[in-house]
Length: 85
Image (cartoon, rainbow, N blue to C red; front, side, top):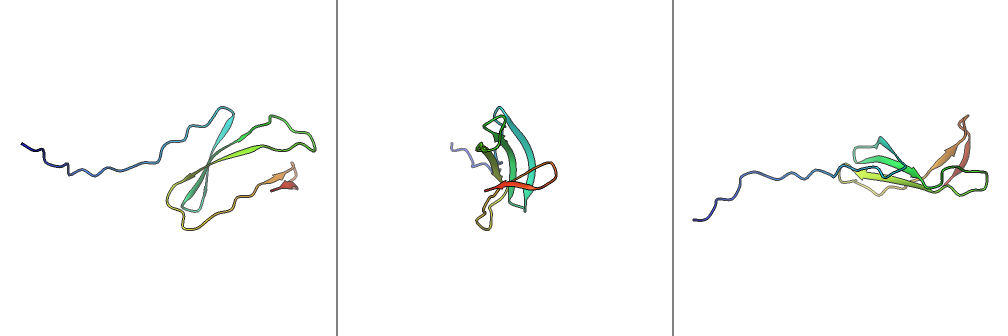
């Protein structure tokens, strides 16, 4: 006797992102499709002339409808741009 196929539909959920050690979790959304899940600084402290090593962890909440470009501004305490890439 053959079993009847299940009538239940499977729903796939995006995996929960576990921040890596040293990563700061965020929950910033950019439109309906993208979420910045966290970021991490590879170098603990910086002095003028150092290179900032920054990892950004993104999650697609839904299918993006276009390509995106990411850029970063580094600001001082007063909001002045110190660097950008």
